[in-house]
Length: 194
Image 1 (cartoon, rainbow, N blue to C red):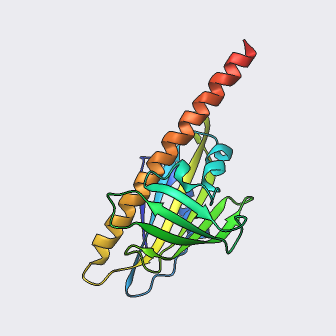
Image 2: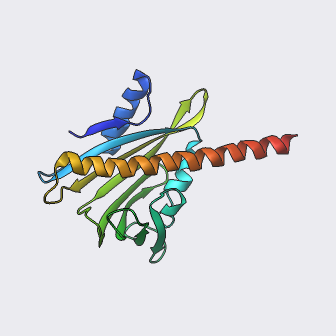
């Protein structure tokens, strides 16, 4: 059973709902030489806005701070590949990724890393986006799970810690971008009504 890491504090009800979503959409099958985890982020922006960023398989650099460039071969659809260039500072330079799942109704994105210059072998992730009320306003619950091989010479804990750190960075950046766009939208709505 993978561990669920809640990035932000939330009341018990929220934790139960989160666990329900995780059981429904984030059942990763972890082999003996792999590690897996589930991470959660609450974002104070409407679900449609957050999903509009997440679903762009062709533009992960819009919110992923370690991506410098992305090229998709053909129209982004199930089975499409993207070539991602990684910014310096990470133990990687490129990543080849396949779009496994894109469901606009359920707001599910699934990706497998199938090649590149990095140590994330057999990496698979699922990211889901759910409507949530935060402080009385429309917000978003984002859940991301992954499974990956543990590289030789590493422990499961070290590998999970490294991948979780990257995902936390991506989710924090997704929150910043989404919340900034949401505040600009609120400001422009207010200006139009004046």
